[in-house]
Every structure is written in structure tokens, then in C-alpha cells.
Length: 92
Image 1 (cartoon, rainbow, N blue to C red):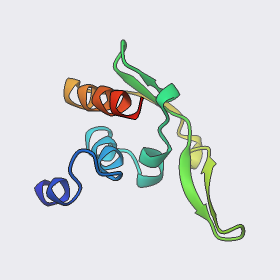
Image 2: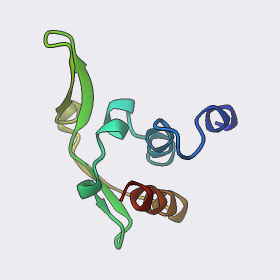
Image 3: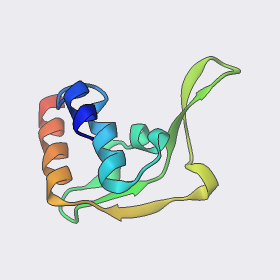
Image 4: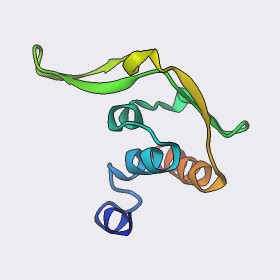
């Protein structure tokens, strides 16, 4: 994990998906599919309702429901919540 964080530090476009996968055990596509509307900062939860997958037939990245209909709400820790709040503020 230390090597990943050195290669993809905070501010890098891959950092947030890596941290979502690490903290929540998400699949890569699910981590890239998390949207701000899926995050409840007050309850410190993230609702998984989709994933990003490359569609070969149309040659584009597409948002799909999660594999095996694995819709779920996951609790996040303070460290991840703080990171996401910083990223949201940066994007705004």
C-alpha cells in the first residue's frame, strides 16, 4: 500500500478510487463508479449502486449496476471521510 500511495498521492486522479478500494473493499469498477450523490457525510456511509466498465462494442467507459446486483451501503471511517471532504472541496 505504501508503494501505491507513493505512486498515486493525494491529488492524483487514481488516489480516491485506490483509497475507496482499500478502506471499503470495493472492486476497481465500483470504486471508480462512486459519485458524490452516493456519499452521506453525516452518516459516514457510501451507497454502492454502480460501477464503471469499458464496453468494447461501443469503445467507451459506461456506468452499469454493480456485479451480481450487489447494491449496498458501507460505513466509512473518519480517515476516508476526511479525505473525501477534502476532495469535494477541491473539486468545488
